[in-house]
Amino acid sequence: MKQIKKNLIIFDMDGTLVDSSTTIANAINHVRHNLGLPPLDAKLITKKVNDHNLNPAQYFYETDHFKGEHETWFSEYYTKNHEMELQLYEGVKETLEVLKNNGIKLAVATNAYRKSTVESLTYLGIFGLFDTIACYDDVANGKPYPDMLLKILETEVLSPEQALFVGDGSRDEMAAQRAGISYLMVNWGFSDHQDAIQSIPELQQQILESI
Image 1: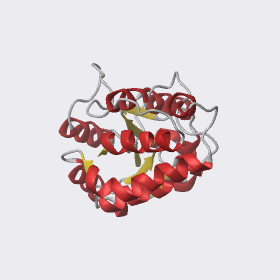
Image 2: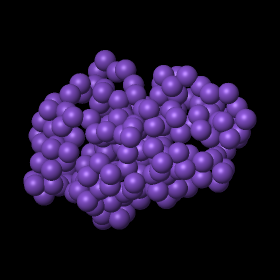
Image 3: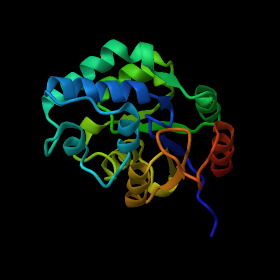
Image 4: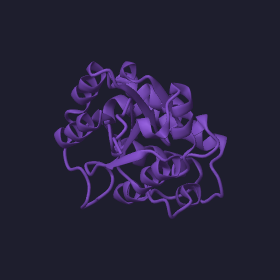
């Protein structure tokens, strides 16, 4: 059977496009401080943020589910500090531009809130490269559920077979599987995978071979 060419590449944001480990750890600890909880080690936070086996609200904030005040405090820190702490992984912008020049639609599916997502991508100079963005507060369930991937497909009027999702963790991989979308795992973010793409040039090559 002939392989269907990909018309849409969806990217996870944190740990895939953007090195936001410092900002995420500090923002989570900012929320914990406001809740009267002691800070967590930054390396522990970046290790656990992609762990699909835990309830992140329970683990980070000792509550059953995220609340509005958590989003407010997290975004408060993010807005004040993202310009000092965020950076693109080397080669990301150039790769996105190559894909756009090849007529490929681009999207972001992130468990970050929309406000911080737009601020981050705008500051880093890549917001305008994306056709669609789906964030944690745009859907009923974040990754590892497929909601935001399905929302992107619906917006772009494409089938799962026409899309490819690029991420750096098990939550991303599970979301892709549940949405029926092909998946590529990268290994320069918050995780440590052996069987994964190890560099931006390798990722660009694999994507170009699929379109």
